Length: 189
Image (tube, rainbow, N blue to C red):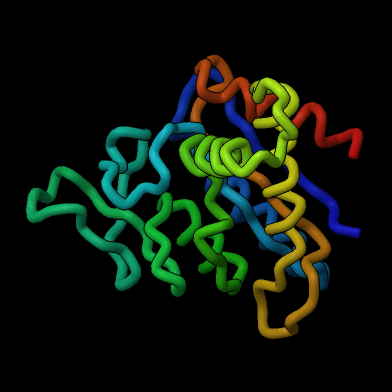
């Protein structure tokens, strides 16, 4: 059974939650546990592909797996995963610290969650009910975390023992509220 560790911030973004999450994962990995990571970015964008890291508190380091967003050096970079997913730079830290291969599904955004919920509503999956943040969006977030946390990410091909979940942004932002509520509910699953 996969265990979960949530790393969240307070009222300030960009204070090193990603490095803390990566470091905690590395410490757990040194004890022999298989570790994966999920980054939650509570913005409406589907991914970071068209978004400047300066928009969400990232200072960047350029490496072979990052892509400049334009020729303007001030716009920044995104991290490109093996499956082509353009994600937050924290996922690059997770891959390097933990020596794992992550996918675009390891990065959850409000845009991805809302798109999934709306698609299910249009297909009739909610049986005509009024679709709401609680329970529909919060359940979608929890289902996503549970599904992705079980995907093998290292050479063993085995399900991870631990999933580090980093909730980006700040807890005071209205965008974070559904994720905070989903994490509160998650403890009861």
